[in-house]
Length: 310
Image (cartoon, rainbow, N blue to C red):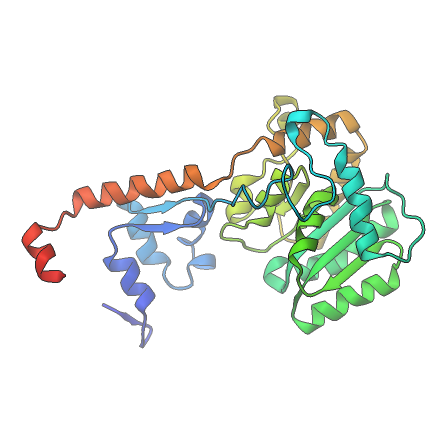
């Protein structure tokens, strides 16, 4: 039962013998049932799904740690309860000074797009490298990027910063304080992942009113509502969603986000929508408890057997 293309797979055993299989987002639970994301396990996952034994539950975020109202890493705390999140502009200034202390003047009215993460293909690092020059040339946006990964991408982002020293600011590596400051100071968060089982940064961004630009995959699809005219009118929009993981689509989505940014009243409504979303662990934990209780009710172990197993 554990044989997998001539090898032994404990993952296959877990899928087959578990009472219930969970994935970290509803969309990803569907994606792993396809050849593109199932990696040879899609057949057995389809069988579990058909029996109702496969569920997708979003990861939660620690709302005590990722909370702009009491984040110790940011210079100017803020919250949605006070209406316009005007302190974000002050956090932007603080953030840009941290990245470029020698620069005397940076346009604070220009939109600032941030990125924090691994510099790998899965995260769309190559898409960003190809898209940023276009956005720099055709818009007034600035960029702050924090991350590390494959040398090719690290060198590529470093070269971009050298090419556009007044528009693109890059720090190779990771620093917890800077990650929080990017969430608080940036206006938008770039996350064009090719695939993303759940993702956390887009949820951090929503909590901080930093509207995410994401690819429609996995948990990104499940957590960000695209700012289409219809969704804006309905009051449900929270970010911007790319339908394909391509440079052309990233450019389109980025330019559209920048157009909306220059409509202050609309932008403030989107920020408020985003910050009112609840992605804490309470709801996710309750969903897991329901599954455990349901599975336990169908697979009760007699007390004598429990004693023997101990």
